[in-house]
Length: 372
Image 1: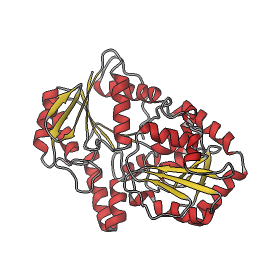
Image 2: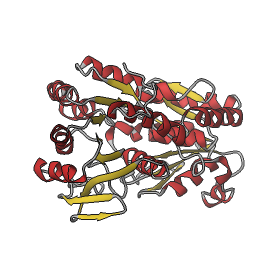
Image 3: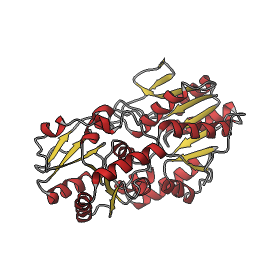
Image 4: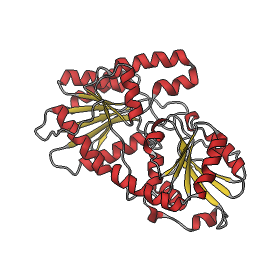
């Protein structure tokens, strides 16, 4: 089986989609009878080690992302690769190219709805835009042979928009990179924290749906006994005195060290479709205080953290204090065990591979599907 992934969500500083693609292609490359290729935007056309790029212009203020404008070159590149299955990882030009290439080749095309485009754009541009995008998403994804959604809530939303062939497909976590053993006792010293101060962390892009402003207001209320390490490109630099900012892309190893060295994660995001960084925090053995919204509501289990009302500064402050009145270290150990059981990348990809075989009619297909 030759699988080709196509997406514009692939940039040097990109997040969950690139992590998913890298993990999938790494694991599948070691399996007999499977070939995995990737077609993504770049500065120029190239092909190296199964990664193929076509030129596309950079998005202004787009964190390195490039946006293809013409469908034709991408459709023809897919056809030239001769895949047995095409997976589209965004709802833009490349998704339509994937559909047309699949039809031309007579092979299945699959769409992964990683990001809730109608809500994200509706938050910025209003209800009418949200409704138009819901119709667009329903029309686009209704054409795929199968649609993957990273959480149950997102699968239900797709079904509401008329998409029928939806499968819940969670992402995974690199359990070696994100591990409690990467704790660095010197980090607290570098941050000039004493033994009684609680170290909190959040890592990610600074975008409106992450609600970083809520985290800063929470830190003002928590006071000097708590300190927040805020990591990621575009993070604000005018912050309370109990906040340290690393305003740049941080590689996974750096994020893992920070998570393993902290006491808990704070996550105020309300539009997460998986919440990968929360799972990475749990894999590092720390509990999570998060908004009861989106995938965080589904994937932060009881005993591994505390959920609070979305965008409610007082409730997140209360939840953070409550966490430390319990046994945060024990909660962190439970969180690690939960991620090991449910989100090991190898187990995730094994299940996904069975779904691929089912779509292509391979003899290796097994009934692992979870269609909604």
